[in-house]
Length: 384
Ligand code: NIG
Ligand code: FE
Image (cartoon, rainbow, N blue to C red):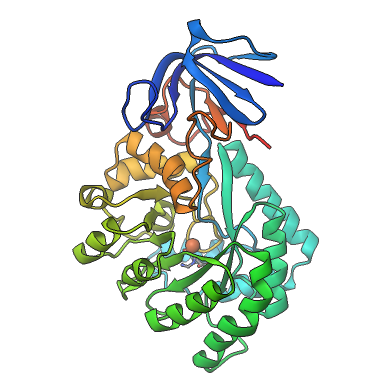
């Protein structure tokens, strides 16, 4: 079974071998053929080969599906009062995580699944075709396994985040870090692809994070890291040292950090929804690009710092508040996210890629930043 998408006004492939030979690999008046879930042909609409089905895009923009490489989708309850207090001037310090842990522990599997599916549905409707989902709102051994099982119902990109906060049962942090790096990692590793640690002021130190990540790697997990959200405690250096696929937030980074990232295969994932929802200063994304760092953009969907389920909103924020061009932001939300997940089959529409794509209700991808606040995604196509 093959499908021809034709009359595409502007096709973004993110493959520099196609179209205008820019990083965006752009074609106009274009067509794309999907066969067996993969991109089988890309070119001018007038040259398109026949296919079993035909979708007339009527001049709309088509682009790769968004890759949301950082979410905390599985949780119960909300933190709207905390948000309201923040908008009145209270700072964010991570302390609210405890209230989400209490609500999540109290929720049934069915409640958690229903709430998570609803958020995943919102992401999909907004064009997300691949998402990463973390645990981290239970912090008991069985509870973290339960959250990872639920995450596994949503995606293959599941992340063990037992080191999200100190579990309320523990007074001794060394004891908790040892537990996470030991028994909890052993129990959770079969249910996760990745491990992550919240390495920041008031969370876990670089040495604690190194300990947890090393055990995770020994257990067969790949690595990523939360770093530089609240302060620069050296998380970026650790991420590079441990060859993490990505270090996420990067609100506080030094020039030295940027140089280290540029010479590494670690992506910097920026999460502008977190700055928005904590009323914090946004990082200057131009600094990263000028230094040669690979950028990704993600929602960080969580109840505390970024209850955001729209990659379109994230792109608009990155353009308006972080200094990216609409194309740079789009690339970060697609191919950048794919690199942050060490995937080369998604995030682009080159030949052989997964045919995960978005048909916009707009003639150009730049409308995502130009017309913020409405969902411009007409159709999300996710190949199975
Ligand atoms: O990415 N920073 C750590 N984790 C989340 C927020 C957690 C929370 O406040 O519930 C984040 O921003
Ligand atoms: Fe996060």
